[in-house]
Image (cartoon, rainbow, N blue to C red):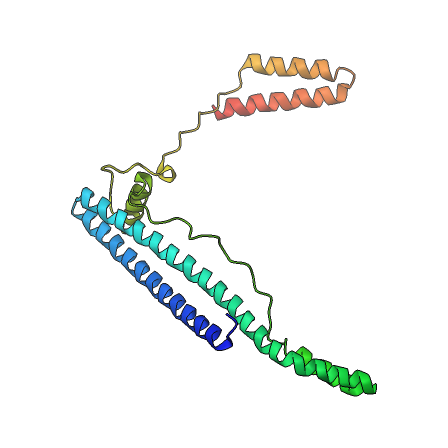
Amino acid sequence: MGNPEKLMTQIFDLKFTSKSLQRQARKCEKEEKEQKLKVKKAIEKGNMDGARIYAENAIRKRTEHMNYLRLASRLDAVVARLDTQAKMQVIGKSMGNIVKSLDSALATGNLQKMSETMDNFERQFVNMEVQAEFMEGAMAGSTSLSTPETEVNSLMQQVADDYGLEVSVGLPQAAAHAIPAAKEKEKPVDEDDLSRRLAELKARDMFNPDFSQAAMSHCHEDHYSNLLDS
């Protein structure tokens, strides 16, 4: 990669490849939507086997879509690094002249010329940015030939819910649709319970008559309230 022209050609080719991968990603996304629509139509016809096949296809296209995007992102990172290298090569060519100018300025003690030379040197780095490391070490999650059953069922249920379709054959009910168990009706407080509570309060606060009297009054109020409610 010592030849700047060759390096720029490689950068152009990689950019073109990245754009091609992004087009493939958009194509897979479109095909995923088409497969979801087929799932909907199959469910409407009661063709659950066909709906399951279309759901598997939709999931496969979704996975391909994400893989294309990941690879395009990795290529973009490579292009950025190569672009930085190309700029460094251009800067390297001008370094010789800059060093000569600095030597001349130092020999003559011309501080103004030294300042101008350094300004020229710094301008070479204005557009330089620190590039990140490769986003990922490998393309995560290769396309699997078999799709998990739970994922297929989940997608079929999602499509059915989106279009307001009733589906129950072969599909597990989502936890969100489960009917919560009815709360047990609170039992009324009986006389024995009130007596026990009063005894505990008296034993705890026997040295504070005012507080015990207030607590006893409060318990009686609870008792009358429970009687009225019942």
